Image (cartoon, rainbow, N blue to C red; front, side, top):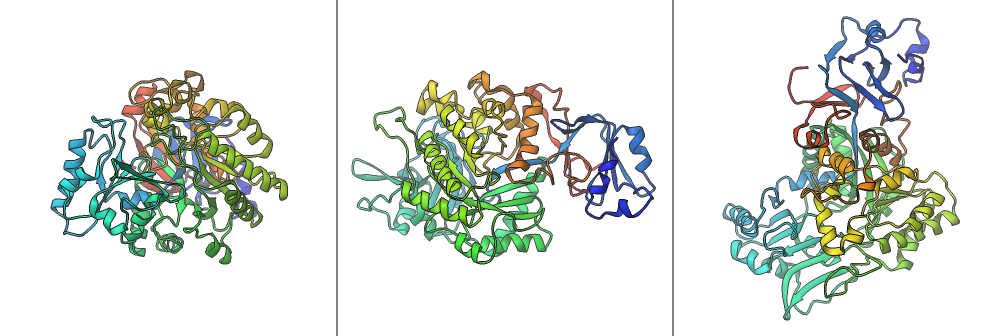
Amino acid sequence: MNISANRSLASGAVERSTARPVADIVLRNGPIWCGREEGVVEAVAIWQGRILATGREADIASLIGPTTRVIDLEGRLATPGLNDSHLHLISLGLMMDWVDAKPSSAPTLEALLAAIGARAAITKPGEWILARGYDQTKLDVKRHPHRDELDRVAPDNPVMLVRTCGHISICNSRALELAGIGETSPTPPGGLIEQRDGRLTGLLAENARAPVWAVIPPPTEDDLVNAIERGGRHLLSYGITSCMDAAVGQRGGFGEIAAYHRAKREGRLPVRTWLALLGDPDKSIVPQCYEAGLISGTGDDMLMIGGVKYFLDGSAGGRTAWMSKPYLGDDNTTGVQMMPDEELNELVMDAHVKGYQLICHAIGDAAIEQLITAYERALAAKPDPNRRHRVEHCGFSTPAQHERMIRAGIYPCPQQVFIYDFGDAYVSVLGEERGLKSYPFKTWIDLGLKPATGSDAPVCEPNPFPNLYAMLTRKTWKGTVMDADERVSIEDALQAYTEFGAFSQKMEEVKGRIIPGQLADIAVFSHNLLSATPEDILDNTQCDLTIRGGSIVHDRLGVT
């Protein structure tokens, strides 16, 4: 039992009184995994939203009073609340109303077109139909849908179908017309407008999609708040109590900052949220945030400004991640470079000097090289050994880049569920030599780079169990093993989902472990993850109970 650290509790009540506090909640009768170093205890006591004590049941029993709520775990595992260190909360909430184009719902092209057609049948002519989630490598036809096919099923509505990665869109003719995109439209820098035989296919990649987004009606503040609440409650159902919204400003501009604060004020912010401010040129909300004093660390445990995000490339599965060597195929493409070196160097330097942590998207090795170089320049000009600039995704980093990251204090922030969902696609577009070795998780851990993990939802489902399965097995959904040397233990995987997630946000002293004084964020799972097989974790495990700040915020069984 650990009572001594009670004095670190914010209220200081323990120091001022000789009476021992009575716990608000006690969890008992099940393994409680407190952290990678702390291991397993028998019971935990919660008081005033924080961990009061952990230890043996006999010792914790002395903290139980007449008002204490005692929860019998019945052998189930409790862990620190999970931290999805990279997802898009507003987009997740908004897209829960879109047509579901994921392979699990639409495994064939005809099923996908039927789903869009069904939505068109109940949508007024002229109104937009939005869909997301397809993966051409998983469709029966092994190709992207075509604009003519979307025209056929939705002739009276503009349609935008977004690939699962979020970096490629297929538009029908009405959507292209509204966006002013035709066969003679110039391809913007960092973008792609696909044509075949002199005719648009409807495929737009990266920056070329901006004119389409510009004519889609933007969400209202009510829409944004509803999305935050809906997406956040979905996360709680998986035991996720913290997340990073990885591109705030992408749909609602600076208004998304107002929506987040309104959601918090009205008690409609379900999860602790760390905000990554979109900084891309022409879409940046950083100047407004900086003028308002919103720099990294501003806020509180529930809502905090995290840092600035720039997109350097696209997605590997979509063949737009920027690689040093070409993808397989006849087009000899190396992907998409979103910004020239000079522009990125200037943007990174400006944000760094202003005090922002940087959390930039770079998947391909060429993009990672460009980003590390920009970070090194900024850190040399204004040293800060604890700034913790991040490489979001970091899918195809090299050993030489790892050494530079260690020296500079730069950290990878990957999504290991990409191995499960997209590993086969990586092999198909890059070949085995590069594809199988993507996202080298154990290598990062062994090097001390403290990789967090997440889902990039709505790119992947926020469901943590495929993510854990991928870390333990390195298997894809088809069973392909993506370099078995990169497998890790369940303790490593849980540390990535909890403590390393907190570290990536500079909050490891506040959350991420079940130790006295830290926030009482706890997840209880139906299976003991520490002893369950990877297959049981993937197929048969659910989150039964979620506690955030000492309050029960999800109760699947409704029996506590």
